[in-house]
View (cartoon, rainbow, N blue to C red):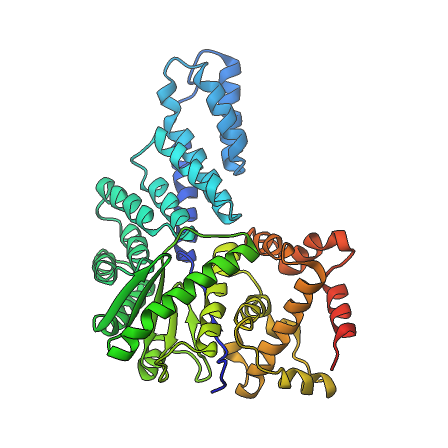
Amino acid sequence: MSPLMPVLSCTYSPHPSAILCLRKLFSTLVLLLLFSFSFPISSSASTDEHFQQVVKFLDAQDYLQAIELLHDLQGRVANPGQLDKLLAIAYLGRGYQLLASADLTASGESFQEGRRYNDEDIRLWQGEAMVRLKQGRYAEAVSLLDQAIGVNSQNASIYHLLGQAYYADGRMPEAVDALTEAVSLGAGDEVNLLLQKVQREWRFEQEMGQESRGHFQLSYVDGKQVAELAPRILETLEDAYTELGSELAYFPDIKVPVLLYLKRDFSAVTNSPDWAGGVYDGKIRLPLGGMHRMSEQLASVLYHEYMHVLVHFMAGRRAPVWLNEGLAEMAGRRLYSPPEHHLKMAMQSDKLLGWDTLAKSFSNLPADKVLLAYEQSYSLVSFMVDRYGWHKIPELLESIGRRKPWQDAIADVYQDYGSDWPAILKEWRANMSF
């Protein structure tokens, strides 16, 4: 295990399978709802024509046009309330479109607007809860889902999402209860596996001491030496919050769970490779490994992990791993920067790893290639920052977060410099000093 242990990067996202399921349900409901209306809804041929156009827009998922026409129709019909469910459907569809494009603020507003017209459609509560989860606003997500349960207490998907919100917020007993209820209501194997994972983690966490400061909630295997170290860990993480947030101009209003495990427990909980010195999967997880004092290596790992938190909230899980890990290495190497021996040897023997390989999880790499993967990623990202400046990195992450393929995002963000992905690689190789 090297002094600066490489870190397996994972990310958290509200279950995408639920989003897909909701979209299917949404399409079905649109058809049922449209055919439940009687035609014409007024004696005006123009009004009926507008209504038919609304139907076409909804069918084509052009929700903005549908919303505009429906609001226009409100002033034309004798009973504007007759249009409420269609307006709710249009705002629901628009909310999911915006959620898919990572425009979280506008997505949340669309779901809220939809509830003005139909607050009994639990998918509008559920949609906004997904937004709040992605924003790290877990308590708000819980509140929204509690209100959805007040509308329909027999919906397994609501309890599934509620369990995820509690889990992300570190409220493990409540997460177990919500997921157990989801399973009892007929949720599938995915939810049952999540329940087992949460129960397994909770068995370890029940024995942990806890301490909180600022933006971090620390849980640790109890013991005098670790308890004395805990305040230093929280202080270092707050320093990372300030320093790295300044570099990326991003200061999320969140409380990040941080868990310190015994080495054997870390492996059991995370199922990570032997070389992993930490994991971020919505929670920062670290093996104690005998640490009893703050060292440069430990501080480096904490900075590394917090950079993963920032990348997650800015780009979701769409960032290529080389970018995610390269940024994390840049953060950690502020405090401890070992020599790049593996990169030097790979350059001299022309045995660099392929970037398509480095865009994917490093956990699939042979153990003897892992350190090279981290060093190579660090080298390229460090070059990009030195050459083009830190201010371009937030633009790049946000573009990737909006679902633009990362090669295209690089071309867009660095076009003012006349650079794209191939040009950056070529210039990086030309500037290597090995």
